[in-house]
Image 1 (cartoon, one colour):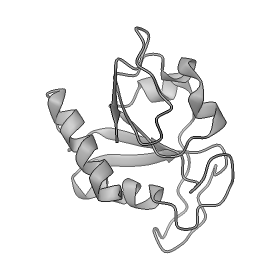
Image 2 (cartoon, one colour; image 1 turned 180 degrees about the vertical axis):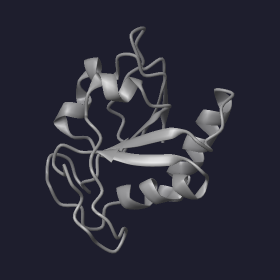
Image 3 (cartoon, rainbow, N blue to C red; image 1 turned 90 degrees about the vertical axis):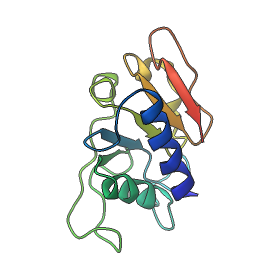
Length: 135
């Protein structure tokens, strides 16, 4: 599934006339399941890794993980980017990987141009996101 999602991300970015290389791509949701702080077996780890192999700057946003626990997927201590409308609008696109309650708020996507939604929780809006790709 993560490879499929990252393919959708690359295709969506290309459709916008932009490259994935150099893009800032936050992944809202590190947990493997909504509203919990358990990242074991989470596909989000691979969704974070694969865009980096294509030259993107992948980062995560998860209120349940302000600092990711060191593990098999990374050596250092990754920090969550802020889960705010302002932070999201400053990125190139979002990849919603976990359906946390707070990620369902339409105001969170104000100013966002593109979302690849793996959980079917985001709807397009004139305020943002302007485009939602289901994955």
